[in-house]
Length: 481
Ligand SMILES: *Cc1c(COP(=O)(O)O)cnc(C)c1O
Image 1 (cartoon, rainbow, N blue to C red):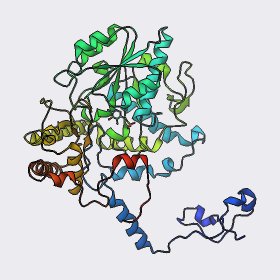
Image 2: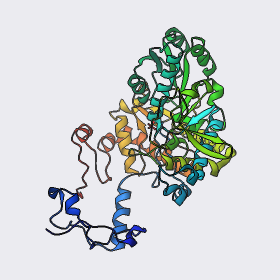
Image 3: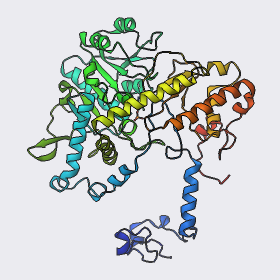
Image 4: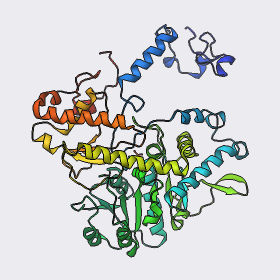
C-alpha cells in the first residue's frame, strides 16, 4: 500500500502554509484503521497563487456580505467589520493562547476579559457582567436559568414568563426550553406594550417579563418605568433582550430603566463579524441580587492579579468551556476602546439619525404602520404593494438585483408583510441615498411592472430558490452554474 499520510516538516510546523507532501508519518497504518487509509492521492488542482487568489475572491463576491455593500437587516445590526479588530486578534498573546495554560502566563488576556466586563457594566448600568455565553440566544438561556435559580432560592420557582407579541422568536423558545409557560402580552396601537394587558396578566406566578427595548418595531418603550414597577410590585424580574443596544449606547442605561438582567449581542452592537451562523459573542449583565447565580468560572481581580474563580456556591454552573468566544470578545473590546465613551454615544446618535432619515424618505412610498420617530431601525408594511400583486418577498428579491442585501422580512409578526430595516451608524449618507433611490424605484415598478418583481432576482448567480425544497433537500455543493 502507498504511504499517503503526511506530516508537516519542522518548517511547516513553524507556520508554513502547506505541509511538505513527502514525509510519511511513522506507523500511521497502525493508528488508522485500514479501511480509512487512502489508496490513491487526492485529486487536488495544481494552480498558481494568483489563480488561487482569484478563485477565492470571485467565490467571495458571489455572496453578499457587509464588506461588499449595505446590509440593512432589521434586528440584527450589521455594521462594517473594522480591520483593526482583525489585526488585534492576531496578536500572539490572544491568538496563541491555550485554554489550559497557567493563569500567571496570560494575565494580559484575563485583564482584557475583566475590563470588558467592567465596560459593559458601565454601558448597561448593571452591577456585574459575565462573558461566558456564546451569543444572544445562549445568553437568554443563561439568563432564564439565573432567573429560575433566583426564584427557587427564594422559595417560589414561579411558572410563567410574559413576552410581548412583537418579540424575537428566540424569547419564547428560550423560556419554553427553561421549563416556563409563556404568556403573550399585546401591543397597543402605538406598537408599545399594552400596559393594561400587562397588569392583567401580572401575578405572583410570573418569574419575569422578557422585554426588548427599543422593541423590534424600533420603538422605545416610553412607559418603561411603569412597566418595571408593574413587574417588581409582584416580585417579578425585568429581563432586557439587549439585541437592540445599538440604539441606546451612551444615551440611556438599561439599569436605570428598571432592568434586573440583560444580555448583550457583542456581534451586533460591537462590530464582531457574524452572519452565516456565527461565531458571535454574548454576555449577560445583572443587578447584584442575581450575581450569586452567575455561571462559573467568574473573572475576578484580587490585588493586581486577575483570576478565574469557581467560588460561587449558588452558581448555575458553567455554560461554556473556558472563556466563551474569546476572540469575539477581543474584537468587541477593540471597538469599545477605539471609540471611547463619546464615540459610543455617537454610534447610537448616528444610528438613530440614519434610521429616521431612511424612514421619512420612504414613508411616501411604503405603508408605515407606526408613525412616531423610530430608534435605530424602522418597520414598513408591504401592504400597498401586496394589493398590486407584489409580495414583500418579491421586494426583497428585487433588491438583490441592485447589489443590496434585503432587509429582514415578515418579522415582527404583528406587522403585515413586514419590511424591517436597520441602517447602522457606519453607513454613509450616500449609501442610504442609494438604498432609498432603489426602494423608490421598486415601489414604482410594483405599480407598473409587477412581473419584474415577482420573477426577481435576475442577475444573481442563483435565481429564485424554491425555499421549501431548498430547506428540505439541502444541497450545499457548488455546481459551477
Ligand atoms: C438577534 C436577536 C436575538 C438572538 O441573538 P443571537 O445572537 O442571534 O443568538 C434575540 N433577540 C433579538 C431581538 C435579536 O435581534
